[in-house]
Amino acid sequence: MHGWEDQRWMLARIRVLIARKFRLDCSSAAVWRLLRRHRWSWQSPGRRALERDEQTVGLWKKDVWPQAE
Image 1 (tube, rainbow, N blue to C red):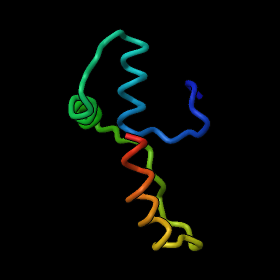
Image 2: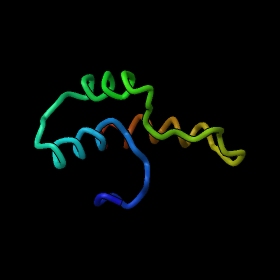
Image 3: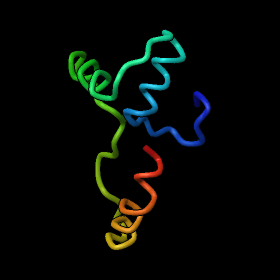
Image 4: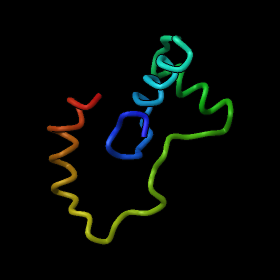
């Protein structure tokens, strides 16, 4: 969907989509304010998976997440 393998809508992806669609470069903070103004939010799961491994998630947040932003 829109060039990404998964369907997660993070601020950075919404920002890219706005830039592609409207040729408008805006900051992540501006995207956040726009979403809040319309009472929208980025996609997030309703609950955590029972199989969630907190230690693995912590390592992922430390090592992988900074590279994704």
